[in-house]
Length: 378
Image 1: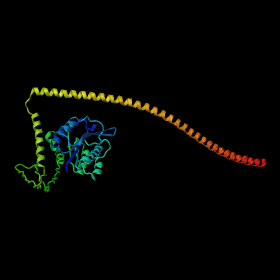
Image 2: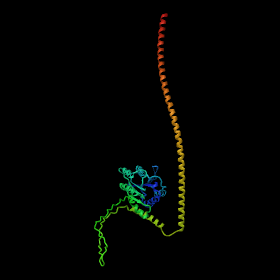
Image 3: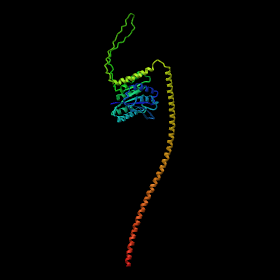
């Protein structure tokens, strides 16, 4: 069964000034170790006034490395709350939709977050409900997590057979790869090996004590041998050689690129071009911020207009309600009038029927009298 991975990236306000760490984690640590032949997706999440906003940046499926890199390079400015538990539920729904169309997969989630759910969600509760019938491996890459958030994250990863690590602000490339290795191994289906702590036999420790002694007295040193420590041999996990070679090749390329950038040779022209490029990027960022501020102002004006329109509509609705009430009263009066007319009509119908019967009786009497008159005339 093929693996499918959903990346959930926290872009809430809690991640402010940490997005560069997120980009380094993904660009230098995760991407070189990914299998781009396997399906994966990417979601970013935040919330506004406790309303979760889960952005589907990349649909689950066969995505290109370049597309993933571009999405990471263009992560938006952090803002709002952090609906971490809600992001998990959206991811589960995404897996079910993908499997309905493409078939079953081994499901894996990679969170990149500082671990603080500001929307009163409880991730371990949501995960525990789902994995009973729908197994999902949850891996969490913490970004400057607090100790309590690290404990909560470890609980979730252990529950699902995933891995956890925490990246601090100042971390060099070599250290970063070491920190990320548990998550990378989990993504390559390498189970962590549990190494038992060595058993050390306790022995009394004899310390060297220097005492005040009379002249010509000798200080005796007692030599204590360290106790032998027995460490059992740990078997090395089996790793796919082709995948490992490709992984090592990508890592070597990045290391070579980093090394080339760190050479002592200085190219003044290249430096000038680099500075010009940096200034250009800064100018673009400045323009982007200015545009965002203008958009925010325009949105505020639009919101004000919307509120005015809502108030006007409320007044119109109130007037319509009053008119509707009057019409309802008139309708009731008309119904009462109809009932009255109906009763009058029934009364007139009865009178007409009575008169008709009397007319028939008179006609019969007239006919009888005519017959008597005719008889007398004869």
